[in-house]
Length: 388
Image (cartoon, rainbow, N blue to C red):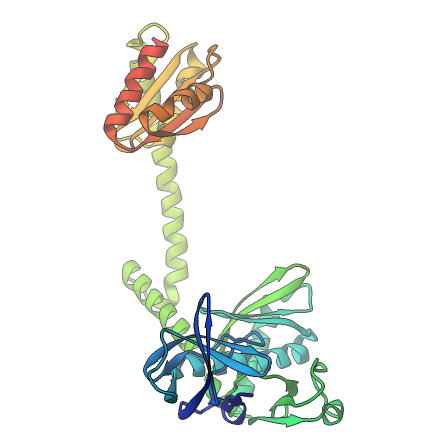
Protein backbone atom coordinates (compact mmCIF):
# COMPACT_ATOMS: atom_id res chain seq x y z
CA UNK A 1 0.00 0.00 0.00
CA UNK A 2 1.43 3.34 -1.05
CA UNK A 3 1.72 5.99 1.68
CA UNK A 4 -0.08 9.04 0.28
CA UNK A 5 1.78 12.17 1.33
CA UNK A 6 -0.76 14.42 -0.40
CA UNK A 7 -3.27 13.45 2.31
CA UNK A 8 -0.87 14.59 5.04
CA UNK A 9 0.03 17.88 3.33
CA UNK A 10 -0.75 19.31 -0.09
CA UNK A 11 2.40 21.41 0.20
CA UNK A 12 4.97 18.62 -0.01
CA UNK A 13 7.08 19.45 -3.07
CA UNK A 14 10.18 17.25 -2.73
CA UNK A 15 10.88 13.98 -0.93
CA UNK A 16 13.02 10.86 -1.07
CA UNK A 17 11.60 7.36 -1.12
CA UNK A 18 12.07 3.84 -2.44
CA UNK A 19 10.66 2.04 -5.47
CA UNK A 20 8.67 -1.00 -4.30
CA UNK A 21 7.53 -2.28 -7.68
CA UNK A 22 8.12 -1.80 -11.39
CA UNK A 23 5.31 -2.51 -13.82
CA UNK A 24 5.76 -2.86 -17.58
CA UNK A 25 2.64 -2.42 -19.70
CA UNK A 26 1.89 -1.97 -23.37
CA UNK A 27 1.68 1.80 -23.00
CA UNK A 28 4.87 2.20 -20.96
CA UNK A 29 6.67 1.71 -17.66
CA UNK A 30 5.15 2.42 -14.23
CA UNK A 31 6.70 2.75 -10.78
CA UNK A 32 5.11 2.10 -7.40
CA UNK A 33 6.74 4.14 -4.64
CA UNK A 34 6.82 3.47 -0.93
CA UNK A 35 5.44 6.97 -0.39
CA UNK A 36 4.29 9.58 -2.86
CA UNK A 37 3.05 13.16 -3.07
CA UNK A 38 2.01 12.71 -6.71
CA UNK A 39 -1.79 12.99 -6.77
CA UNK A 40 -3.45 10.52 -9.20
CA UNK A 41 -6.45 11.28 -11.42
CA UNK A 42 -9.65 11.40 -9.38
CA UNK A 43 -12.60 13.46 -8.18
CA UNK A 44 -12.56 15.68 -11.25
CA UNK A 45 -8.95 16.68 -10.58
CA UNK A 46 -6.16 15.83 -13.07
CA UNK A 47 -3.04 14.09 -11.83
CA UNK A 48 0.19 15.74 -10.73
CA UNK A 49 3.28 15.65 -12.90
CA UNK A 50 6.94 16.10 -12.02
CA UNK A 51 10.16 14.13 -11.87
CA UNK A 52 11.56 10.97 -10.28
CA UNK A 53 15.37 11.14 -10.34
CA UNK A 54 15.02 13.90 -12.98
CA UNK A 55 13.01 11.46 -15.15
CA UNK A 56 9.69 13.03 -16.23
CA UNK A 57 6.51 11.58 -14.72
CA UNK A 58 3.98 11.31 -17.57
CA UNK A 59 0.86 10.08 -15.76
CA UNK A 60 -0.28 9.01 -12.28
CA UNK A 61 -2.96 6.39 -11.63
CA UNK A 62 -4.56 4.89 -8.52
CA UNK A 63 -5.23 1.15 -8.54
CA UNK A 64 -6.36 -0.87 -5.48
CA UNK A 65 -4.61 1.35 -2.95
CA UNK A 66 -1.41 1.69 -4.98
CA UNK A 67 -0.32 4.78 -6.88
CA UNK A 68 1.32 4.02 -10.25
CA UNK A 69 3.67 6.58 -11.79
CA UNK A 70 4.22 6.35 -15.54
CA UNK A 71 7.78 7.44 -16.37
CA UNK A 72 9.78 7.99 -19.55
CA UNK A 73 12.29 5.35 -18.51
CA UNK A 74 13.35 3.34 -15.47
CA UNK A 75 15.74 5.00 -12.99
CA UNK A 76 19.08 3.30 -12.36
CA UNK A 77 18.52 2.88 -8.61
CA UNK A 78 15.66 2.07 -6.26
CA UNK A 79 16.30 4.90 -3.78
CA UNK A 80 14.93 7.94 -5.61
CA UNK A 81 14.47 11.68 -5.17
CA UNK A 82 11.08 13.02 -6.29
CA UNK A 83 9.89 16.52 -7.13
CA UNK A 84 6.46 17.83 -8.06
CA UNK A 85 5.69 20.25 -10.83
CA UNK A 86 4.61 22.73 -8.17
CA UNK A 87 3.05 25.29 -10.52
CA UNK A 88 0.68 22.60 -11.83
CA UNK A 89 -0.10 21.29 -8.32
CA UNK A 90 -0.82 24.74 -6.86
CA UNK A 91 -2.99 25.60 -9.86
CA UNK A 92 -5.05 22.46 -9.24
CA UNK A 93 -5.28 23.32 -5.53
CA UNK A 94 -6.60 26.79 -6.39
CA UNK A 95 -9.15 25.51 -8.92
CA UNK A 96 -10.39 22.64 -6.72
CA UNK A 97 -10.70 24.70 -3.54
CA UNK A 98 -12.28 27.45 -5.60
CA UNK A 99 -14.84 24.94 -6.84
CA UNK A 100 -15.73 23.97 -3.26
CA UNK A 101 -16.24 27.62 -2.34
CA UNK A 102 -18.19 28.41 -5.51
CA UNK A 103 -20.44 25.36 -5.07
CA UNK A 104 -21.15 26.28 -1.44
CA UNK A 105 -22.03 29.87 -2.35
CA UNK A 106 -24.09 28.72 -5.32
CA UNK A 107 -26.18 26.62 -2.95
CA UNK A 108 -26.53 29.55 -0.53
CA UNK A 109 -27.13 32.36 -3.04
CA UNK A 110 -28.98 30.50 -5.81
CA UNK A 111 -30.33 27.44 -3.97
CA UNK A 112 -28.66 25.30 -6.62
CA UNK A 113 -26.77 22.09 -5.81
CA UNK A 114 -23.63 21.22 -7.79
CA UNK A 115 -24.09 18.13 -9.94
CA UNK A 116 -20.60 17.77 -11.45
CA UNK A 117 -17.17 19.41 -11.61
CA UNK A 118 -14.60 19.44 -14.40
CA UNK A 119 -11.11 20.88 -14.10
CA UNK A 120 -9.79 21.54 -17.59
CA UNK A 121 -6.49 22.88 -18.85
CA UNK A 122 -7.86 26.38 -19.59
CA UNK A 123 -10.88 26.71 -17.30
CA UNK A 124 -13.01 24.82 -14.79
CA UNK A 125 -16.76 24.22 -14.83
CA UNK A 126 -19.53 23.14 -12.49
CA UNK A 127 -22.99 22.01 -13.55
CA UNK A 128 -25.64 23.21 -11.09
CA UNK A 129 -29.25 22.13 -10.59
CA UNK A 130 -31.15 25.15 -11.88
CA UNK A 131 -32.73 25.93 -15.22
CA UNK A 132 -31.38 29.47 -15.60
CA UNK A 133 -28.88 31.84 -14.00
CA UNK A 134 -29.46 35.49 -14.98
CA UNK A 135 -26.51 37.87 -15.37
CA UNK A 136 -27.38 39.87 -12.23
CA UNK A 137 -27.52 36.71 -10.10
CA UNK A 138 -24.21 35.52 -11.59
CA UNK A 139 -22.64 38.84 -10.63
CA UNK A 140 -24.03 38.59 -7.09
CA UNK A 141 -22.65 35.06 -6.84
CA UNK A 142 -19.20 36.23 -7.95
CA UNK A 143 -19.18 39.03 -5.36
CA UNK A 144 -20.21 36.64 -2.58
CA UNK A 145 -17.54 34.11 -3.54
CA UNK A 146 -14.80 36.73 -3.52
CA UNK A 147 -16.02 38.15 -0.19
CA UNK A 148 -15.35 34.72 1.31
CA UNK A 149 -11.86 34.72 -0.22
CA UNK A 150 -11.03 38.03 1.47
CA UNK A 151 -12.19 36.64 4.81
CA UNK A 152 -9.32 34.11 4.47
CA UNK A 153 -11.24 31.21 5.94
CA UNK A 154 -9.19 28.17 6.99
CA UNK A 155 -9.33 25.00 4.92
CA UNK A 156 -8.49 21.79 6.75
CA UNK A 157 -8.71 18.09 5.96
CA UNK A 158 -8.94 15.03 8.21
CA UNK A 159 -10.08 11.40 8.23
CA UNK A 160 -13.28 10.26 9.95
CA UNK A 161 -15.24 7.06 10.40
CA UNK A 162 -18.61 6.38 8.81
CA UNK A 163 -20.34 7.19 12.11
CA UNK A 164 -18.44 10.49 12.47
CA UNK A 165 -19.22 11.41 8.89
CA UNK A 166 -22.94 10.79 9.46
CA UNK A 167 -22.88 13.38 12.26
CA UNK A 168 -21.39 16.10 10.03
CA UNK A 169 -23.50 18.44 7.83
CA UNK A 170 -21.91 17.10 4.64
CA UNK A 171 -22.89 18.44 1.23
CA UNK A 172 -23.58 14.83 0.23
CA UNK A 173 -22.89 11.49 1.86
CA UNK A 174 -19.71 9.72 0.62
CA UNK A 175 -19.74 6.43 -1.26
CA UNK A 176 -16.86 4.98 0.80
CA UNK A 177 -17.57 3.59 4.26
CA UNK A 178 -14.15 3.87 5.94
CA UNK A 179 -11.20 6.27 6.05
CA UNK A 180 -13.49 9.07 4.84
CA UNK A 181 -11.53 12.24 4.14
CA UNK A 182 -13.29 15.47 5.02
CA UNK A 183 -12.32 18.86 3.63
CA UNK A 184 -13.67 21.55 5.93
CA UNK A 185 -13.90 25.16 4.79
CA UNK A 186 -14.28 27.14 8.01
CA UNK A 187 -17.82 28.42 8.46
CA UNK A 188 -18.82 27.41 4.92
CA UNK A 189 -19.04 23.66 4.33
CA UNK A 190 -17.94 20.12 5.14
CA UNK A 191 -17.23 18.02 2.05
CA UNK A 192 -16.07 14.44 1.59
CA UNK A 193 -13.21 14.88 -0.88
CA UNK A 194 -9.86 13.26 -1.70
CA UNK A 195 -8.39 16.17 -3.65
CA UNK A 196 -5.60 18.62 -2.83
CA UNK A 197 -6.58 22.00 -1.42
CA UNK A 198 -5.14 25.32 -0.26
CA UNK A 199 -4.77 26.02 3.46
CA UNK A 200 -6.98 29.11 3.47
CA UNK A 201 -9.35 30.80 1.04
CA UNK A 202 -7.02 33.80 0.77
CA UNK A 203 -4.66 31.62 -1.29
CA UNK A 204 -7.31 31.51 -4.02
CA UNK A 205 -6.51 35.15 -4.81
CA UNK A 206 -9.75 35.64 -6.73
CA UNK A 207 -12.44 33.76 -8.61
CA UNK A 208 -13.73 35.04 -11.93
CA UNK A 209 -17.00 33.65 -13.29
CA UNK A 210 -16.66 33.70 -17.07
CA UNK A 211 -20.16 32.74 -18.19
CA UNK A 212 -23.19 30.57 -17.47
CA UNK A 213 -24.98 28.58 -20.16
CA UNK A 214 -27.78 26.03 -20.31
CA UNK A 215 -26.64 22.43 -20.44
CA UNK A 216 -29.13 19.53 -20.64
CA UNK A 217 -31.73 21.16 -18.41
CA UNK A 218 -29.18 22.54 -15.96
CA UNK A 219 -26.70 25.44 -15.92
CA UNK A 220 -22.96 25.15 -16.52
CA UNK A 221 -20.78 27.84 -14.92
CA UNK A 222 -17.34 28.47 -16.38
CA UNK A 223 -14.78 29.95 -13.98
CA UNK A 224 -11.10 30.53 -13.23
CA UNK A 225 -9.36 30.84 -9.88
CA UNK A 226 -6.07 32.30 -8.67
CA UNK A 227 -3.36 32.76 -11.26
CA UNK A 228 -5.69 31.62 -14.03
CA UNK A 229 -8.09 34.45 -13.13
CA UNK A 230 -5.21 36.92 -12.96
CA UNK A 231 -3.96 35.81 -16.40
CA UNK A 232 -7.51 36.15 -17.76
CA UNK A 233 -7.67 39.70 -16.42
CA UNK A 234 -4.25 40.58 -17.86
CA UNK A 235 -5.19 39.18 -21.27
CA UNK A 236 -8.40 41.20 -21.22
CA UNK A 237 -6.53 44.37 -20.29
CA UNK A 238 -4.05 43.79 -23.12
CA UNK A 239 -6.92 43.50 -25.61
CA UNK A 240 -8.61 46.55 -24.13
CA UNK A 241 -5.36 48.53 -24.37
CA UNK A 242 -4.89 47.53 -28.00
CA UNK A 243 -8.46 48.56 -28.86
CA UNK A 244 -7.97 51.85 -27.04
CA UNK A 245 -4.86 52.57 -29.11
CA UNK A 246 -6.50 51.35 -32.33
CA UNK A 247 -9.50 53.68 -31.96
CA UNK A 248 -7.50 56.45 -30.29
CA UNK A 249 -9.98 56.70 -27.44
CA UNK A 250 -10.13 56.18 -23.68
CA UNK A 251 -10.88 52.64 -22.47
CA UNK A 252 -14.21 53.64 -20.95
CA UNK A 253 -15.34 55.08 -24.30
CA UNK A 254 -14.42 52.05 -26.44
CA UNK A 255 -17.95 50.58 -26.57
CA UNK A 256 -19.37 53.85 -27.89
CA UNK A 257 -16.54 54.15 -30.39
CA UNK A 258 -17.03 50.57 -31.60
CA UNK A 259 -20.78 51.14 -31.98
CA UNK A 260 -20.06 54.23 -34.10
CA UNK A 261 -17.48 52.33 -36.14
CA UNK A 262 -19.94 49.48 -36.69
CA UNK A 263 -22.54 51.91 -38.00
CA UNK A 264 -19.97 53.45 -40.33
CA UNK A 265 -19.01 50.00 -41.65
CA UNK A 266 -22.66 49.12 -42.33
CA UNK A 267 -23.09 52.33 -44.29
CA UNK A 268 -19.91 51.69 -46.28
CA UNK A 269 -20.98 48.10 -46.96
CA UNK A 270 -24.37 49.29 -48.24
CA UNK A 271 -22.65 51.74 -50.58
CA UNK A 272 -20.22 49.07 -51.73
CA UNK A 273 -23.06 46.60 -52.42
CA UNK A 274 -24.83 49.21 -54.53
CA UNK A 275 -21.68 49.89 -56.54
CA UNK A 276 -21.06 46.16 -57.00
CA UNK A 277 -24.60 45.66 -58.25
CA UNK A 278 -24.17 48.52 -60.70
CA UNK A 279 -20.82 47.19 -61.86
CA UNK A 280 -22.18 43.65 -62.22
CA UNK A 281 -25.05 44.90 -64.35
CA UNK A 282 -22.65 46.76 -66.64
CA UNK A 283 -20.25 43.79 -66.81
CA UNK A 284 -23.13 41.38 -67.45
CA UNK A 285 -24.07 43.41 -70.53
CA UNK A 286 -20.49 43.21 -71.84
CA UNK A 287 -20.34 39.45 -71.28
CA UNK A 288 -23.74 38.93 -72.89
CA UNK A 289 -22.61 40.87 -75.96
CA UNK A 290 -19.61 38.61 -76.58
CA UNK A 291 -21.17 35.23 -75.80
CA UNK A 292 -20.36 32.34 -78.08
CA UNK A 293 -23.71 30.81 -78.94
CA UNK A 294 -25.26 30.01 -75.57
CA UNK A 295 -21.89 29.95 -73.74
CA UNK A 296 -20.60 32.89 -71.71
CA UNK A 297 -17.11 32.34 -70.38
CA UNK A 298 -14.55 34.53 -68.66
CA UNK A 299 -11.41 34.24 -66.51
CA UNK A 300 -11.20 36.67 -63.58
CA UNK A 301 -8.20 37.67 -61.51
CA UNK A 302 -9.86 39.78 -58.83
CA UNK A 303 -13.24 38.22 -58.00
CA UNK A 304 -14.10 35.93 -55.12
CA UNK A 305 -16.32 32.88 -55.61
CA UNK A 306 -19.37 34.54 -54.04
CA UNK A 307 -19.06 37.41 -56.53
CA UNK A 308 -18.86 34.94 -59.42
CA UNK A 309 -21.99 33.20 -58.13
CA UNK A 310 -23.87 36.52 -57.95
CA UNK A 311 -22.83 37.52 -61.49
CA UNK A 312 -23.66 34.08 -62.90
CA UNK A 313 -27.14 34.23 -61.32
CA UNK A 314 -27.80 37.61 -62.97
CA UNK A 315 -26.77 36.26 -66.39
CA UNK A 316 -28.84 33.06 -66.19
CA UNK A 317 -31.87 35.07 -65.08
CA UNK A 318 -31.58 37.26 -68.21
CA UNK A 319 -31.22 34.59 -70.88
CA UNK A 320 -31.01 30.90 -71.66
CA UNK A 321 -27.22 30.71 -71.36
CA UNK A 322 -24.45 28.54 -69.91
CA UNK A 323 -22.01 30.53 -67.73
CA UNK A 324 -18.45 29.34 -67.17
CA UNK A 325 -16.19 31.42 -64.91
CA UNK A 326 -12.69 30.87 -63.53
CA UNK A 327 -10.88 32.76 -60.77
CA UNK A 328 -7.08 32.74 -60.92
CA UNK A 329 -6.97 34.36 -57.49
CA UNK A 330 -8.67 31.38 -55.84
CA UNK A 331 -8.05 28.61 -58.41
CA UNK A 332 -11.78 28.00 -58.70
CA UNK A 333 -14.20 27.30 -61.56
CA UNK A 334 -17.94 27.94 -61.59
CA UNK A 335 -20.51 26.54 -64.01
CA UNK A 336 -24.16 27.66 -64.12
CA UNK A 337 -27.23 27.59 -66.37
CA UNK A 338 -30.99 27.99 -66.02
CA UNK A 339 -32.22 24.65 -67.25
CA UNK A 340 -29.73 22.93 -69.57
CA UNK A 341 -30.14 19.22 -70.22
CA UNK A 342 -26.87 18.42 -68.43
CA UNK A 343 -26.60 18.84 -64.66
CA UNK A 344 -23.74 21.11 -63.52
CA UNK A 345 -23.21 19.05 -60.37
CA UNK A 346 -23.18 15.75 -62.28
CA UNK A 347 -20.71 17.14 -64.83
CA UNK A 348 -18.33 18.19 -62.06
CA UNK A 349 -18.69 14.89 -60.26
CA UNK A 350 -17.87 12.96 -63.44
CA UNK A 351 -14.77 14.93 -64.50
CA UNK A 352 -13.21 16.74 -61.51
CA UNK A 353 -10.98 13.88 -60.38
CA UNK A 354 -9.12 13.91 -63.73
CA UNK A 355 -8.02 17.48 -62.99
CA UNK A 356 -7.38 17.11 -59.24
CA UNK A 357 -10.39 19.25 -58.45
CA UNK A 358 -12.75 19.10 -55.49
CA UNK A 359 -16.26 20.49 -55.38
CA UNK A 360 -19.80 19.94 -56.54
CA UNK A 361 -23.20 21.58 -56.62
CA UNK A 362 -26.75 21.41 -57.88
CA UNK A 363 -28.19 20.84 -61.34
CA UNK A 364 -28.06 24.57 -62.10
CA UNK A 365 -24.83 25.66 -60.41
CA UNK A 366 -21.59 23.97 -59.34
CA UNK A 367 -18.16 25.13 -58.25
CA UNK A 368 -14.81 23.52 -57.57
CA UNK A 369 -11.32 24.34 -56.30
CA UNK A 370 -8.07 23.04 -57.81
CA UNK A 371 -4.60 22.22 -56.56
CA UNK A 372 -2.92 24.48 -59.10
CA UNK A 373 -3.68 27.17 -61.69
CA UNK A 374 -2.67 24.73 -64.44
CA UNK A 375 -5.25 22.14 -63.31
CA UNK A 376 -7.89 24.85 -63.02
CA UNK A 377 -7.30 26.18 -66.54
CA UNK A 378 -7.22 22.67 -68.00
CA UNK A 379 -10.63 21.92 -66.52
CA UNK A 380 -11.93 25.35 -67.58
CA UNK A 381 -10.87 24.70 -71.20
CA UNK A 382 -12.39 21.20 -71.12
CA UNK A 383 -15.70 22.54 -69.78
CA UNK A 384 -15.72 25.31 -72.40
CA UNK A 385 -15.34 22.73 -75.19
CA UNK A 386 -18.02 20.51 -73.64
CA UNK A 387 -20.64 23.28 -73.49
CA UNK A 388 -19.68 25.20 -76.66
